[in-house]
Image (cartoon, rainbow, N blue to C red; front, side, top):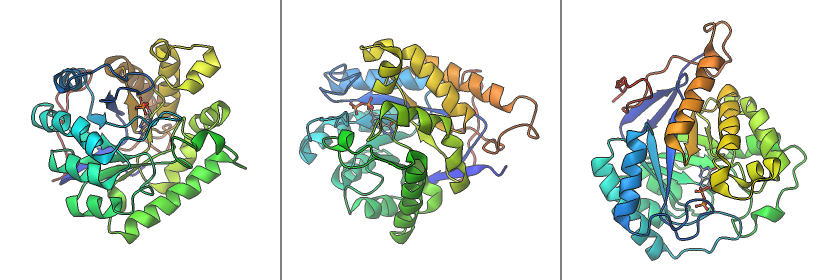
Length: 312
Ligand code: HH2
């Protein structure tokens, strides 16, 4: 199969054979798993650097929790939370930094501080200025599926077929981006595990993830420690959901995920790379259609080899 290119900030990554790990870094008091874990910017930076050293390919910095019912954070406060951390990680981390925000003003400040990717859980729909900011900066983006807002989403789970609904949303997202001059090649798509979905719908999305590959865009999946795992296994504490996370990461990779957004970088990197090796065993003739030749991003992966980057 053709390799899929992800273009952002003058880079071109060929996505395919080797999964990329996006490390989660929430500088919030109330995130469902790591809320309040990094009270000072230095603590957050140290954790980001540790995730980079553990093999993350992208660091995702968020200043507003998106868990169900989370409080809305004013723009100025969100900027104050994320910018100092992003500035340091962009300077010292050696890997791209993304900002997890729905707000164009926060995205703009984060991009000015050195972020090169915007992770928008609203699929570019919450803020009508978002596409312009992305286009003007030449940034990459993650466009995630959800319905409503974190405050309303859990009541919006009525789908005739959740996979077809998310597929249609992705098509609309790519059209919206194109209308605003954001290149298709700069968009990663994410089905939004845990956002306006029941536990069962999350399982279905992971099992049928391959149905999104016809869109020709890399898929990002965020399952880490989420409540559908807790519900399936009967585990209350997010930090105790690592094994369930590992199973979900493995299935996501087998079914075509290119980027895995996780809290436990070193562990899930092993899981993802093993799943990719199992997926691709036997060569191209037997591999599913998402496996193309791949030149990894500029970070060291589990083998210790420092890969070269392609493109400009
Ligand atoms: N999940 C969360 C936040 N941002 N972004 C993308 N693209 N995909 C996801 O699945 C996703 C996301 C929720 O997880 P977390 O950041 O750990 O918690 P919180 O939103 O409470 O800060």
